[in-house]
Amino acid sequence: MDIHANNVQVKAPAGQRPYKRQVKNIIIHRPMQREFSFMLIALFMVAAGAVAWVIHQTIRDAAFGGALYFGKVNPFEVLSDVSYRIIIRVTLVLILTLIIIGAYGVVFLHRVAGPVYRFRQTLLKVNRGELPHDIKIREGDFFHDMAHDINIILRRLRVEHEKLAELRSKLTDLQRNAASEEARQRAEEMKTVLDSFSKI
Image (cartoon, rainbow, N blue to C red):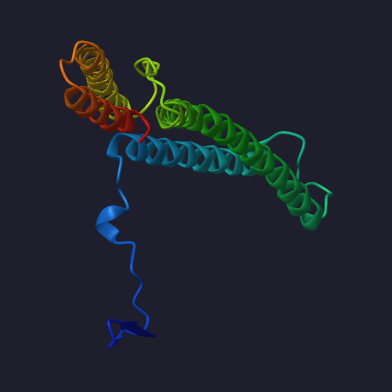
């Protein structure tokens, strides 16, 4: 791809993306990603152990007792019955595991989506020119450090807003008590510049 800037032809390297995902940037929030990964690994290990136990118990019941016996029964029928029981029990274990993983995923994502929703609502209020209250996050939610940083910014905005209001009030008094028309005009210009800050 050729890029023309100031009549200079620059050839971009082929296949190079401006924002390339790197391995070192995959883990961006260690506590959240570590907890989620370890929990999934633990659930799959429990599911694998349950499947192994079900297979072992089913074969043991078929070989050493239970309803299956090798007297006058065709071995193929015995194996078919064992396979059927294994499939049913393993399927039930996997379905139960999926239900647990789904429930855990909903709860886990709620701990992520809740703070993100609060951050977005706060930023929308700031964008509208409002001064929202500090962000409060539940104890088990993630992004407490980010909420703390945003609250610091909000406190600074409140302080700056108070200073601007005080400065605007002083300019109004100065404009009212100005001795000359030139001084009143300068105060009006300063007030106009000051009002422009609140519109950014």
